[in-house]
Amino acid sequence: MRLPIGCDVRDLTTHNDDRGNLTEIFRQEWKSGIEPVQWNFVRSQPNVLRGVHVHVIHSDYLVCLEGTLVLALSDVRPESPTHGLATTVTLKGSKMQAALIPPGVAHGFHFPEASSLCYSVSHYWNTVDEIGCRWDDPDLGLDWQVRDPALSPRDTTAGSAAEMTRQYLTVREQLRASRD
Image 1: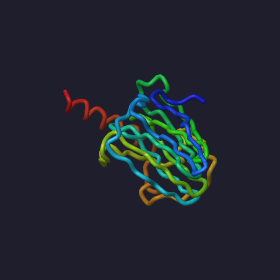
Image 2: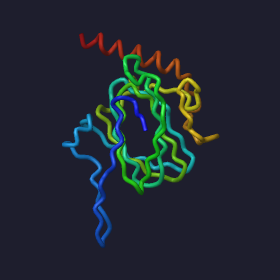
Image 3: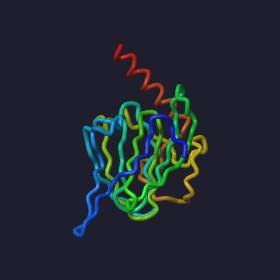
Image 4: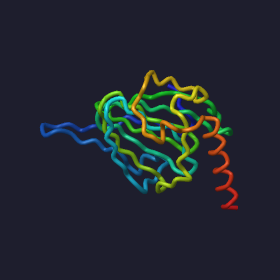
């Protein structure tokens, strides 16, 4: 499976004994590319789709703890060698994997069954860093293999992938200019 540059999927090791098991979901020494400042826990009902959105500043590190997460990725960074690459990755709570998503890679989550997701972010949530588009916009190049998912009001009324990309590039340039 080919992923956008900077994205990673890591198998996690589970240690079992008669009492149950333990899985390390994050270790700083893994050089994941993220220094978490916040951790979040999400429960989703079957057929919920969250996103699609892209971040200018923060990276996401996520683990599906229970159920199934179909993670969709679309690289909108014009300078990236994987610009335009779109793919889906299925993470299962029974398999225990972690995924890293850097800034500039648009992403969304579909939960075909009731699922639990734990994720961290490298920067605190900020509305400027949360730029979205319609999950089914053909310009994303994503094959969700889902029809009529349950969406939030924000995701239902989101704009086009082209507008999301324009807004991402504008905010990115504004942030770079403010640092100089």
